[in-house]
Amino acid sequence: MAMLPAARQLLLSNWIQPSSANEQQQQERAERMVREAIDGSTAFSGSTLKIYTKGSYPNNTNVRRDSDVDVVVELQDCQYYEYLEGRSPAGRKHSPYVGPWTPATWRSAVRAALEAKFGKDSVDTSGTVAINVSAVPNSRPSADVVPSFAFIRYDDPAGITFHEGSCVFPTDGAQKIQNWPRQQLRNGRNLNDRSGRRYKEYVRALKNAENRLSADQVIKDLPSYFMECLVYNVPVATLKYGSLDDGFRETLAYLWENLDNGVAYADWVEPNELKWLFKGHQKWSVGDGKDLVMAAWNYLGYGS
Figure 1 (cartoon, rainbow, N blue to C red):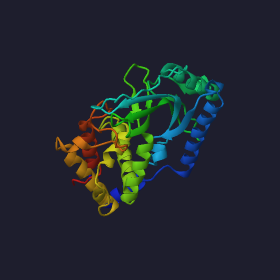
Figure 2: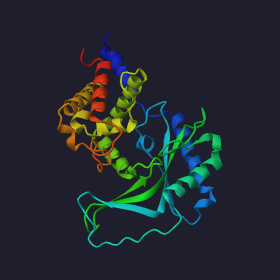
Figure 3: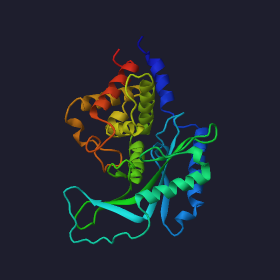
């Protein structure tokens, strides 16, 4: 039976809601406790580091009952860098790092600090990227702690234009992962303002749709960041179109039309605007996007 417009409007109104006040307090507690764990360790004495959250929590795109926290522990002493593809340094000299921190020793020290704070049974190191601190029901959500390094990408041979980010080295030997959380935060806020808050509302709606559809095994489970990326590439005029229901229908229609085009999505980017959405090594594909959009369209009964 097709979903009636009134029922769809009510569902979307629920789906666009951010974390509840209680969930936000628990998220803040998880972040604070990770900071306390790192600050309380003598292993980092003399080193300069930054601790900050990234992902849906600081970007305010997380959905209710899905409130995990990503915390970056970023070493500033050792700075990695690359030049934009096709560029090469023009006689620039970078002093080599001679300190004690390698990806392995840095990860080990962060793990030890977390185990000292939370206990070994609460710290899971089986992941290749993040170290997970388990949730405590009604107290704090789980936290994915990412042992990272400062990273710079130079866009010209002279190194005049550059972007500051972060990088992490997976334990399975895969190539390092570059992240741009500050740019993602800034650009997301900008688009949300220009779209009358529709951007983050529709990100949450699409995340909720994916949660429902993957739980029902209609589609495979997809990274929540992928939904944020997809909606980021929708024009402001489409996001702002009509009512909440009308605008989400037009958003899904725009995504489908362009994903099914074969070339229209070639210049789509992640919200940081420093990485292509469908180029390079990604955890998703164009086909994943099409499956998600079509399944969401059918679930909400837009074609009926």
